[in-house]
Length: 507
Image (tube, rainbow, N blue to C red; front, side, top):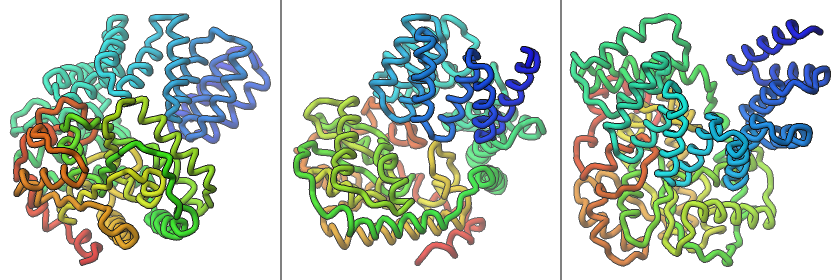
């Protein structure tokens, strides 16, 4: 095969990658590698396809072998770092990113990836410096601008976030994730320039479904601001319909998962692992139930470190419980160690640590066993309000039950049923924080919450909105403000559109 034919085949594979036919990409690339062992681009494509399928160990194995032949290949080093980063092996990931940058300090992709890692570790200044280094090399780069915008947004510096989001949209108007992020920090009127731009952009046929759904969510927010609730719901509903087509979510999978969780609780996790002395507060519940606000309050305490959403427990337990596999005591001890090692990268002090990944409610039995000194705070909100708040927002991560009102109602029922199961087992060890009570009587509710967490009183908790910690969830704006009541009964304006949800939810 001549080089021209090889180039054509590689372009075909790249196009398959773009439309997410990763199995075909893997098969085609493997065949080409057998004939062209010296073509480094093939190893990188294969590595990225493995990563997209979540098969990071295969990517690591592939690139480790490739590096033996080309030890200073910065692309191999970067992709090795990325594979470890996907596995949350942050120390290994940092090692490979830095090796790539030692060879080429101006390798922008590695700069951006290392900055993302620093952002995950809440090393905000280091992350900013790395993103800015990349932009000093080339100011016309979408990803560093977008990542800087997200970092400033999480840090509460909305003016700088807007600047970088506008740069992103100038570089690529079709990168509609930036439109959605911009919508979240913009108060719209009918004449707002960005609103007019989005209305024009949504009519363009060349947008793909991913781009359209982000824009529909953004328009839903804008129409809500101008009190056009019909058009707001229409856009939110369109966005969710598109995402449902993409995810192909089936509620039966979660019904099976929740059944397996209950069964495996009896078989696997009756023992406590008392070797762990670390005190962790797990703030959990449904998304949009007040978990960000609760963490912002608790982490305002001088003896608490706010860890944000730690997804490691889901990584450790999801597939095992989905497949109804048994877990040995040694495996559980390994899980405990991996979690504690991970959070020690974020904070290695004696402070109390908070983890506010909402869907950790699924693993409460494991938490009680592996972390016996932990506290569980369940955030609870009016179910219609909670579900509507979920439906109108787009989430990064696997919250695929949120894109259909009947799926959403069914999942909420599963959540309530599982929480009843845990409360029967653990009785008074789960503290229920009602969102409406917190909004209506913040002072007394905050004091009761801090008391439950076995923390001495700290008046900083009443001024939680001054907390400078980064907030990487869709609640980044609300949790930085003093408590306000406009979020209560927000669904009433959309009541006529929520009949499917009401009829699905258990009374």
